[in-house]
Image (spheres, rainbow, N blue to C red):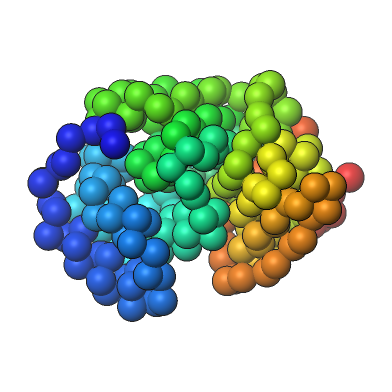
Length: 227
Ligand code: SAH
């Protein structure tokens, strides 16, 4: 759809898809194709590039991480994207998840709290020619106008799904995010039908904490309660 196919390290990506993703039960062909196509190594710091296709999260600096490839695939598959979908991502991090979403949907808005990460992700996405992604620096739970979105992906954990994010869903839309304590969450999928929201719990997972107006403050994280 946008960037040209990157053959560099394509064999490693094919193995990543077979051994880490298909083997764990994800068989959504467009999602697997996107995971084979997007050069993950271009989104991680130079020092992490040799490990870019390993079965684990990797550090991005600023205390943040790029999720394990399987988790990126599982969250993407849970959104059941149509090629016409408008997508919101909260927590751009490296920009890798946004690149995967951008191959499958019409339009992606992704919001990142840390200015340096937002700038780096914007550059990596531009280098790939991902013209249908907009990177916004700010609080993805509060700082920008927009929507409704057919899909919302939150890449940071909170004790519950913030209603401000749920409310950005279009009718029939889906949201996926990690819900739980700062140290352990459950991947949670919310489906909107009219004014009703149905929540379904999936895999256990571990993400960095959601910050901002509707996320954890460092003090609340310490005592595991949120106002
Ligand atoms: N999807 C990313 C991984 C994200 S890690 C990737 O593909 O690399 C989670 C990110 O969420 C971190 O970069 C963190 O800074 C960011 N974050 C946390 N709270 C946020 C908020 N309220 N608004 C925007 N970004 C937030």
